[in-house]
Length: 186
Image (cartoon, rainbow, N blue to C red; front, side, top):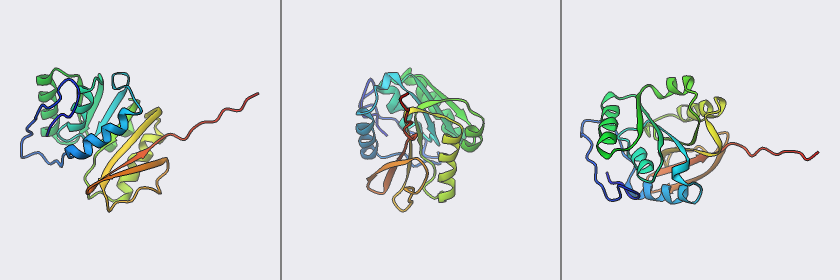
């Protein structure tokens, strides 16, 4: 795994082989950040990384200047690796061990970007539960994106607040947004 841009550009990180992860490919990650670069100043946003795994996405945000990052994963080894790597890179990532659904039910953390990379084998209902929790609990800030990475066989276009998707090989990023609010002039 490699950090593509920012302060730690080119830095290679080696996660323990025993971690139950499928890191986002460099090509897909670079494409994702090209999209986000057109929408955000990374030093001004807050990020929530769900099913964080190795922390690959969190490190990329941190390297580009994001200072408020929360990474959540249910695996102790993953959380431990993220904490250790964040300390080595001297970046601020709060890594939490928690079942993601339980975390979403309890948290009050609001973020500009919520990135979720659950297991590709999830059912459509499991993916939908992520979006429902995020939007029902008001966890996404106005102008923000919920981005879910999933296999190309999974279709999420029917899910509420779906905006668009981008395909990269066998991976897809589906983007969800808050509906625009219209204000009536008096």
